[in-house]
Image (cartoon, rainbow, N blue to C red; front, side, top):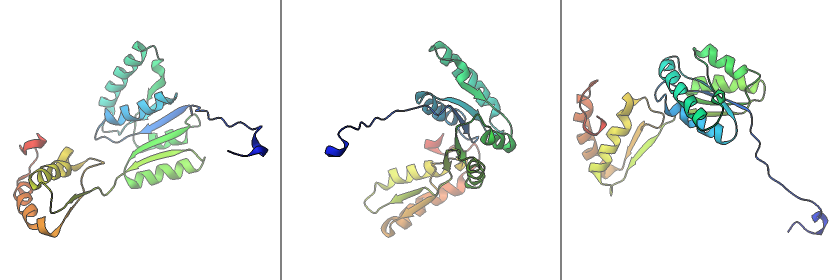
Length: 200
C-alpha cells in the first residue's frame, strides 16, 4: 500500500512506439541480422531502416523485398521496412538522421564506439551488440567427446566470424591434455572447404 496520503493517485504504464529504428548490421548472417531487429521493431510498433554491411547488400536487398511482400500479405504497410546501402559513411548518416529514433548496431567494438559517440551527440538511444570473448568451459566431469565436438564447431563455425562463437576454451587441469591432444590434429588439418564432420 502507498498509504492514505496517495490514495487519490493512480499509476499507469503505457508502451509507446519510438518511431523509426535504424539497424546497422554486419555481413556474416544477413538474414538473421535483418530479421532480429525487424521483428523487435515491428512488434513494438516501430518502422525499421536497415543498413547492412557493404559486403552483404545484395543478399539483404533480396531479403528486404521478400519481407516487404510478407508484410503486405499480412496487411501491414511494406514501407515499414526500408533499406539503406553503402559503407560506414552511410551508417554514420543514418545515426545522425533526424528521423531515426533509436539505433541497433551489431559489429566490432571499434565501430560500436563510433556509433555510440555519434548517437550521444543527440542523446539517441543505442543498442550495441559488440564482439565478445565468449568462453567454453570444460570441467573434469564433462562428456569429453561431446565437449570436443561442440568446441570445434563453436570455434570454427562460419570461419570463426560469429559474434557468439567460442573465442576461449577453458579446460580444467584433469582434462587439459586429453582435450588438446584430440583437438590439435583436427585444427592442424583444417583448410577452406575441408570436410570437418559436424560443421559441414
